[in-house]
Image 1 (cartoon, rainbow, N blue to C red):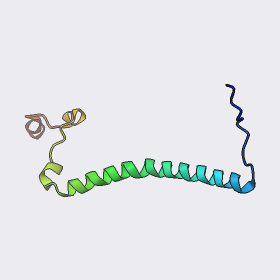
Image 2 (cartoon, rainbow, N blue to C red; image 1 turned 120 degrees about the vertical axis):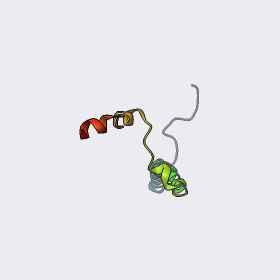
Image 3 (cartoon, rainbow, N blue to C red; image 1 turned 135 degrees about the vertical axis):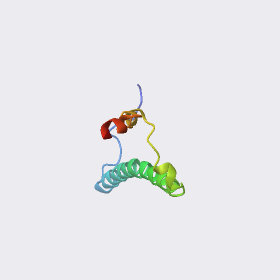
Length: 82
């Protein structure tokens, strides 16, 4: 805690402050772009992989838990028609 540097030492000229603000602005913009671009590139990559799949797996029944309740039960169609 015996540093001779205080947080307010340095060059406070308008050019230096403008450069500092611009650098912070560009760092924030780069971070925001990375947050958007990286997941977007991942999703686009999955889309490109799906283009090489045959159409049958894309049209298959959804095996997730919620989709099971939407599946027709055996004999339910005959009961409704009969």
